[in-house]
Amino acid sequence: MARVLIVDDETNMRRVLSTILKGDGHVVTEAAAASEAIEYISTTPFDTVLTDQKMPNGDGLSVITASKDADPTLPVVMLTAFSTVDLAVEAMRQGAFDFITKPFTPEVVLGVARRAAEHAELLRENNRLRCEIQRQGFSDEILGNSPAIQELKGRIARVAPTNATVLITGETGTGKELVARAIHKQSDRASNSFVAINCAGFQETLLESELFGHERGAFTGADRSHQGLFESAHRGTLLLDEAGEMSLALQAKLLRVLVDGQLLRVGATSFRKIDVRVIVATHRDLRLRVKGGLFREDLYYRLAVVPIHIPALRERKEDIPLLVQSLLKQIAHELKSPARQICAAAIDKLLSYSFPGNVRELRNLLERACILARGKEILASDLMLMTEESKTLTGDGPEDHLQRWLGSLPSRVDLRRTLEQIERELIVRALRAAQGVQAEAARTLDLSRSDVAYKIKKHALEDLDVSRK
Image (cartoon, rainbow, N blue to C red):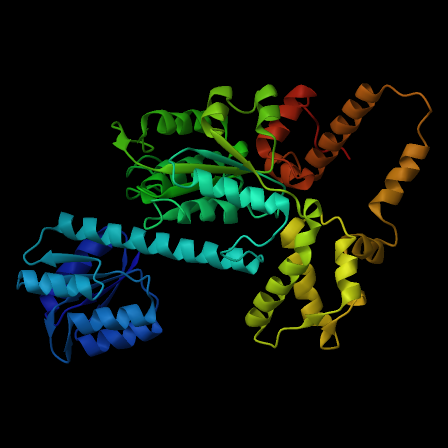
């Protein structure tokens, strides 16, 4: 469903277009003149604009200009009875998404409207992802002069011009999407789309539809065909973040795309040819998941053509001062305040910290300090590290609890059996707290749902009474 603005001075034409689009589930607003349309565009969000060319109080080209000024992602489709090459060229030059000549068929209108809405959705999602990357402290440049970062940049430069599939590994917060974007920008696909999706953020059925698309009527609620992200990334790059969380069934479909360059939409009977470079990112060891039966071995070897590992921040601490200066500038820009300085003692404190959350954690530390610090300069006392925060909130760190528990164990233990018992007890506790909802238990344990399902089977917990506490 898209929000569509129809601009035409002929009442009957507006009614015809409105009927066609509403029949496809779109929400329609009508404007009888260019001036009226421009006012709507300045105050109301739309997904697509269909505008006539010749109207009172302005023409279709003025609507295009106003649309691009208000929202660069807003596609405008030109409607005209005067089919001339010059007009088509001028409309496209001004930024029109497409061009329809009157008279037209309903199928043509619906097809163009759907493509325009999907195009806008893709552009806006990419803008959102770009803003999210910047919010997390990642710029378009991979910062650092350490040997580890120099090696990383060198590997990116070597693999980018190829079409090889890349497997990016690294801890959470190291900047895996930043590396994927760097590969895309240095490739011959840079002028085409870069599309990213976090596979861990979707249920299996929704993820299948998002990746491969679906046909109208494929399932309940599928009232129109949907283009998947593989098709959106045609001739570009698709990043599958946390692909290790995909089900085995989806892994089989992904393998088919990688082997044959063809995909099958949900509910479709014929394959579609696509040209997409796939980059996979994960914080998990896929080799271990292969051994555990959670990841296909043949798919692993298809994905790991060129492996790239991003070092953790604690492995390149010499880059921290440079990162701090860059992040402080970004934060100041976002907060609309002067950039703060940071004292040497604060830098020393950061250099002595292990940063389990990597660059993302460093960014959050600095943002908090910029907001809460009383002076113009960030002091060591303004930086609340995770270990200090835990003790402040609980009065006792998790390490202290662990040490006391270890001290209560006998001197001789069966390590393997003890670890199995601990794992089983944690799974039971999480399932009961979540009333048996595996997805919720997985979030509690910071595991994927497939991991929890595997462990439930491993410990024979399928018939667990979750009502007990």
